[in-house]
Structure formats: C-alpha cells, structure tokens
Image: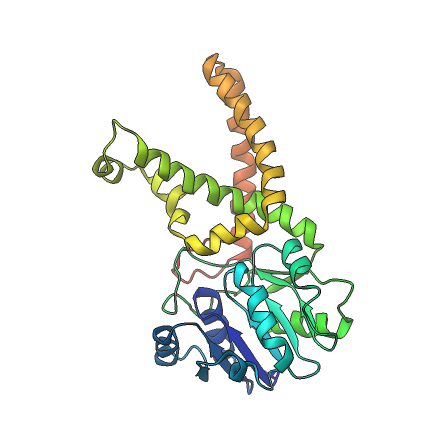
Length: 306
C-alpha cells in the first residue's frame, strides 16, 4: 500500500490514537508515525506495544515536518494544542481529529489555524469502553464508518487525502455537514451514553438496594446496556459540553416519548405499550441486520461506537 502521507503525527495515544498507529503498521506503510502523549508512562507503553515508530515528549518536536497531524485527545484539549503547534507546522500540513462533536470545535479552532494549514474535521465511528495505550487494536476501523465534516475553507485535495487515509485503515467514509453530524451522533451515541451513565447512578443511589445487590442480581440487559457507562469520563464530559445544543434538542424529543410511555404504564395501557414495543422491536432488528452486514468480521472485541 502506498503511503498517503510521509510523516503522520498522532497526538493522544489511547484507544483511537493507538489503533490508528497499529492500523498504519498493519499496512506496512512507508509513512513515519510519531506519537505524543502527556505522560511518560503512556509514551513508554506506546513504544512497548509498537503503536508508533517513535514518540516525542515535546509536542513541537512531534509535529516537526509532519504532513498529517491527528488530534486523538479529549475535545477540550484541541484549542490549546493547536495554539501551541500552529507556528511550527510546515506549510501545507493537514490537521484532522477523531472527536465526536464537530460544529463547536470548528468554530473554536477557525481563527487560530494558520492560513497555510488545513483542518479537515473527522470522526471514526468506532470504539470500545476501554481507554489508554493498552486498549488499541489494528482492526478497530475495519468496515466501520468514518465521517468527515469539511468546511468551506477546505480544498478538495485535502478532503481527498484525509478520505484516502481513513479508507486505507479499512473505514468507509462519508461526508456530512457538521451540524447534521452532531444531531445524528446525539441520538445514536451521546444520549444512549447519557442514559447509561444515569441509570447506573440511579441504581447506585437507591436507598433500599445495596451496591452488592446491584452487582449480584444485574440481569443481562442491565449489564449490556450499562457497559458503555465504563467509558472514559473526561472524553464524555467533553462530548456533552461541546455538543450540548444537539444533545438537548434530541433529549427533548426523547423525553416527550418517554413521558408517553410513562403515562401508558400509569394507565396500564397494554395495547399502547405492545404497539410501541412491537414497532421499536422491528426497528431494532433492522439495526442489527444492518450491523451484521457492516461487520462481517468479528474480532472478539466489544465495540461501543462513540
């Protein structure tokens, strides 16, 4: 496989950043892959696992002469990182990211990206509830969607190169408007995570149910549904902060539908409950069938899209 970029710098070496590095290694690409993380322990582990070719403790050294810089950190770190590295990026460098919120990030970074640098926002729809340098694996992006949300400032060449990069890692790429991306992810990912976090908290706070009982008697549904509540707290607090408008809009719709179900339960309206469950069961089956088509290879890893 021919390399898309000569030098790739991955900032953030957790699940997503580490998996990008391992995916590039799997390609036997001639690209040099350099990694940066805040802690020496993460950098040490990244070298031990072979996530990247080399690591840098200094952010400026990491991006030196890079053709492509990927931000794989929590969203709240993007602005300070871009502010620090911008004066040292070579002309024509392309920056992209892996964040789960787009519109607010684009607005935040718009005025601090140099004119000779392009930021092509991206979001691989892949992940697990695990985090850290030990969580990444090369197959994470295989046959998974990656959404690019380019802006009017992007050239067709930069979009093409970023698209080609993600396709080389095994992803299917779709172009989407940033605001539409945020609404889609709010309902398909962000609100489910919010509900999972909340229901675990509710179960834990019940005065007449001990923590031991919550663990001991948790049915499969509770365990499966709340697995995503083990996801990285920093990452998810940033997502809800940066995508608050879309989350609130979708949460309002969800709350209205939940209120109707609550009323049906109160009135013991079994016909309405059955009708609703029958309809949603059919929708869920379609989701599962589509997922089986998109994920014909099972790598034995629990996947939680973010």
